[in-house]
Image 1 (cartoon, rainbow, N blue to C red):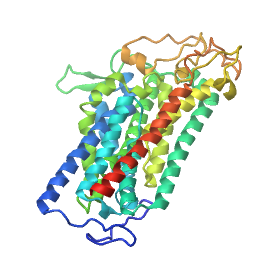
Image 2: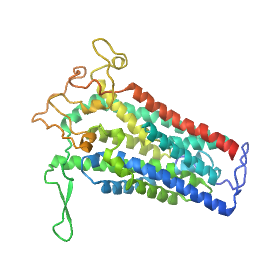
Image 3: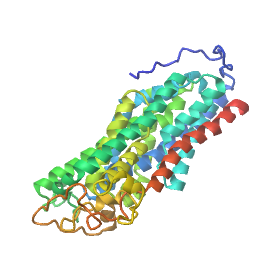
Image 4: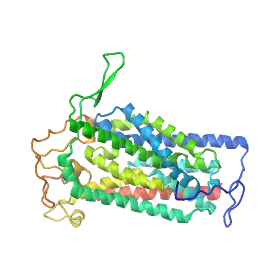
Length: 444
């Protein structure tokens, strides 16, 4: 159960002391049915887009490494997203449907407006190429409703906003620590193989096809490949836990138009439609956010981001998987960069150390010249061959001993890009509040 109590006891047509009258049964039954149907269609559209984008993020490494096919990735995503939504995700649905504002405030029209602003955040994210948070934007639209009706749970919003501030900092810090002290060692000793053919093959010589493992796979390949797929499933679980509420919470809160179980089924069904259709294009480019990351780095990002979001979802706190993973990516690049430069040197270039533009590409070029890195997800998607692994593992340079030959100066952390991303994280929920408040206050 969520730590936040639901407020479902308010009757239709009643008022809350000190607030505007709660919307009652002001619509004819046929209009209610029509608006509910429209709400379900809009919710399905939001879930469709979430499924399309989240499948690529979760299973980009597995598809890029040719460990699973796109259809298999879609099936795995839907299965584990359903598991996450059905278990942990219902806590987030409860919070967004009845705890931020009373459930009775979600009239059919109000629900459609909230879903509209949630879908608009996806559009903004796609147009600007920034992983804007649908969770944060959906909450922003609900906050606009709460402010307009005077029913906002301010104590709960303080907790949620605090979590939005702390969780990216936790991901960033973990990324910096791992990038600076752990990643170079993992990068030397953990390898992932890209296969020319799929990892799992099928013998179709008999009536019933028999699966078998690619004969070119070593024991290390088998272990690494299973790890890639398992972490993809874990990311799908986290995506289902955090994103189901974004698609259906207003409908669950809408005077009981949908139960929580029905809402989960609707959300996952929409995820599935996106996973098996538009996600195929996402999987071809294997996810914009992680395309140039080595497979090892993408797994670290997935574990940290997914764990933080799953933990928050278990407490019913809506939070963004995109924000957590992006913060981890930034931290990894920054931590890697700090092995050759201090923070002051990264921010303020000196004559003997030229300007270093820091991005996650540092993870691609983190090995010394005699220790080429494994394939990045983008390399695999483009069909490029990775360099052969050396016979002997070279020594890891000490902190401060690496130089431009070891790390590409153009490939560390770009402060301007980070500023743009953070700006969009703040801007999109703010725009949802500013846009939804006058709609709820003056038009409804």
